[in-house]
Length: 82
Image 1 (cartoon, one colour):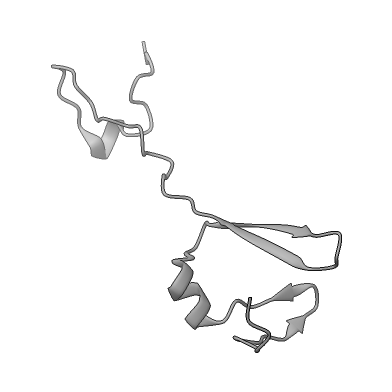
Image 2 (cartoon, rainbow, N blue to C red):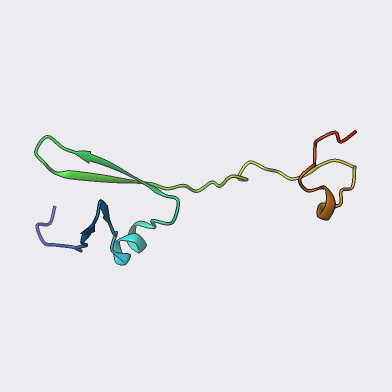
């Protein structure tokens, strides 16, 4: 492991920025999480947990025969209004 400084950022309040070059190199994007671990020797380990699935990642779409009017029924879809 190299002893040279790869990048540096400043802590503001209780937040720190990840330098852009490191974000690009590790493909860190909005919604990804960082797991922090302090090793017994004081070394800080950070693991990037990438979120590659969104809220609708498992949604396969409407597969029924009934037509819907999204402009008037989008909030009520699947709800019996009678």
